[in-house]
Image (cartoon, one colour):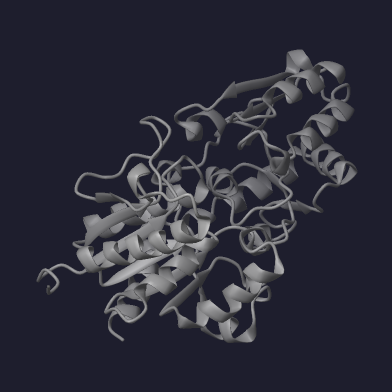
Length: 371
């Protein structure tokens, strides 16, 4: 069967559309390509209940690639081969010109199942490479399989050096685009005495670090509060820790809320204390809002891709409570410095404007499809 004539067809392959950074990037890209005249299909292994996933734009087709209950075997090996065969059938039926995948084993599956077809494969690493490929076997597979892909997308220069030189040579760096909600003039009025953070409440985000640093400065800055937007398995622990530190009344945890941009734009300071990240969307959005920012130097290089220390933010070592405390004290005690950093931070709106960044993805995809 031949491909349908006319529009070029792009498939995105990811585990699910559960609300997270990589998933949001894929939905945003899908919407862009749909709006610019491509056929777009989103292929996911799983589907979460409504409300737990990002909604797809009208016109984007959804295909579930995981085995149904009747297709499952008692053998893990048999199930693996059936998953490979089923995904290969998806590509044969959909006949995309190009498939973009991300996250760990999904990239391996895309390369293997598009081999010997007319479909071009592009694999991407959007998180911390050491976490996506955490053991020797996964790393060996990545270094041997990635060269068979038609394209390789990384998000930081530092992540190149996780891979063999055969992968490094062919990889391109493509950033995430900025959420359009954050493209607006910077707030210029008097700032609320509020420190903010946005992110899932898990061990990796290390909110404990910011609670301890805030508690250490609480008496010096009695008018300030700390608000952490997000939810997760450590919420109860963090609330308990705030109580033990004596700051319960000054720490707010409103959960997951809509319109984050409006909630944080008047804040005095934004904190990112993660142990690891790819290129953090929350950090991108805080910078675009024009907030003074303190962020940890995550191993992937995601922070240094966005921040030049002392120019548009402050960078501190991962897990260094005292460094965070000193940086917070410095910006809270020097409003002129905080204002200068915040004004410079807002310039990222130009660098990561959706029309510019999405255009870079489109140019890259077109080059791959024209091979």
